[in-house]
Length: 590
Image 1: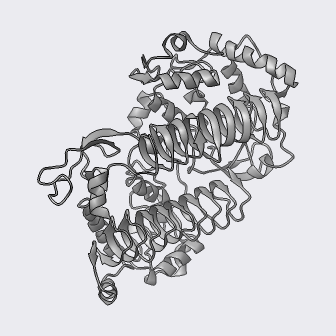
Image 2: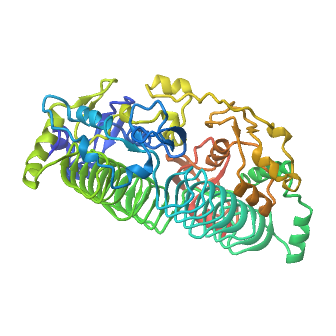
Image 3: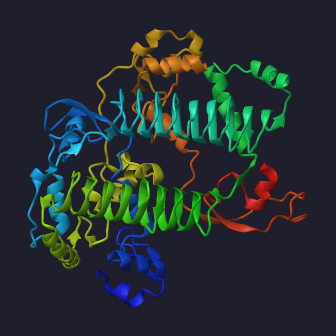
């Protein structure tokens, strides 16, 4: 059993301790100690937020580079920059039978910290250029499977003809969207949508059709600039119209004109600030804290989870049970700790991209394996340490020795931080710079802050292309745009003067142009990265603040006085939104 003295002494009480990284105090609860004892790890020395940042630093999901394969010499697209210290090979080779990660196996050196030896292994074993599996015509994507004809998408699966989509699933023909799932189709500039179709500018909507500019609407059809509606049709700014009146009003709006759309977006943002928001989005969840929680129970400090149980500090997770500290994963996991991208696993600790495996620790890119420690790139293997094969008896004898060794000879990084068994990989092990990863999206930092905190920074690539058309000179309507636009290099209107990883210029591909023509959408004047970051502004932080309900309406249950209900919410106190408690919100929205 691996426990530090703090665990032994205080496992029945809450303990306040100081984060090694940010130097702030945080609390470890009795149930946390019970979990750490169960999975035989030292209690954490990083606070929950620093642990989350550390995991996110290993996830470059959207930044792509042109480079050569270090094995075949082939020109490839990769999430790893050309100057990366890590070896990178073409994904087709990496996933083929020709690739054998076991050839890089190392003997254990008891005179070095184990993580130092893992670091040596990580610089030897080639990493796959992209995470694209079983997909057709999807070369310029990452983290994709079972999809076809997609372009510049990430974390998109079982989908077709998706363009610039982040987190699409079982959907088709969507462009510039964020989290569109469950047979959504023909959506543009939409976010967090379930089973929606033939619509534009939908945010947090479910089963909405033929609509524009909707916020938090469900089962609505033919609605325009509305919020908090349920089961409605022919509404404009939450006012009911006749069918004829609705379509007559829409005929007066030139949605094909860019300037008209820009004015409508300003009006829409003003409108949704005038209607109440629910303090949290928690549905069919029992004894849970966090936000965006669905069909879960006994989950604490979790955000964006579905069908999880008895877990803590999860972010963007489905079907985890008895687990802590994880980002991005699903498919029935149990006893998982300090991981990212783990699916269909049990007893996995401090790992990155592991699926259909069990009893795996300190490993990257493991599949269909068991009893693996400190390995990279293994499939259908068992009883391996540092990519070297052992017998079952040898492995089981070595395992407790390695754990003990990690406690007695911890890895010490450049900041002087110790890493004992249970801590995730040091930040310096990440192949990516802070601003290449989703850490920058959830915990945005200015360049000076990255430098102050010792994070790697990726400076913008020097571009060798010349813009052939300025964004301001683009046709204002798609009907005035001919096919020659696909030959142009369009300058982004931001020209790099933003914190959005602006590419400064971009091109339009044929399938994209066809989509815009079919949906009467003018050519965008911002690059894909700037458009992505614009959508992120609609997402709340993964943090809670304590506030009071803002409702003072006399027709609600609280009568003549202002509602006195208080709650935790992901809306920061100084934000302009009107935030209601659950009961007051229901009286407004239903």
